[in-house]
Image (cartoon, rainbow, N blue to C red; front, side):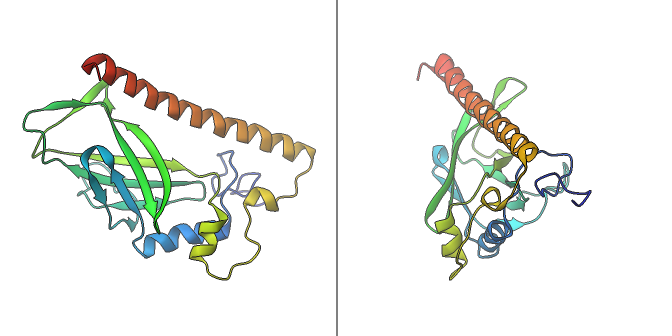
Amino acid sequence: MDEKRNPFGGKNPHGMYVPLTDDEMEVLFRLADAGEYKLVVKDLGLTLTGFKVGKYPGPGLYQGESIVTIGDKRISFTFRLDYNAPAVPTPNWYFDMELWALGHLLYQHRMPTESYGKPIQIVAGAFNDFALDIGIDHIDPAIVKEVKAKQVGLTTRQGNMHLDLQGQRLLAQTRAGEKAVREITAAEARKATEKKKKATGR
């Protein structure tokens, strides 16, 4: 096994995760190259497009461009929201986000927008920069086939792995950890919803 990879072939040797297949990775890049990613901010009635493959340049260097960063387990979207309402500063606890491509809803998430335990303030003429980080267990084979026409026998990395007993135990522990992270993310979204209800009564 390459020393620079984890036990499942992931490119981060310090991360315990099952990476996407080469086919799945290619699909993510093809969708980006074709400009297919659409990020919908339902609360604002706003659809963000034009995501280009790249990396967040860092504080002070980011100029509001729409960036998609693709890894072998995660995909991240960096973007800027410019507000044309409300007229006075208003607390905002979360945004309901949807990710679309090829007419398919790929992901939806209630993204908390708190800073130091308090909701951000939004007002016309202001803006905020955000990053939406999405962990991917696998991509629907139907979408993979739609992007990569005439592909046969596509499967996930887990379906292709031949593991001994120790490897199977490690895989089970890894999947349990991934599930725990998803549960934490969902709990954070529920907490943001509850805070808004408590503060606004709705």
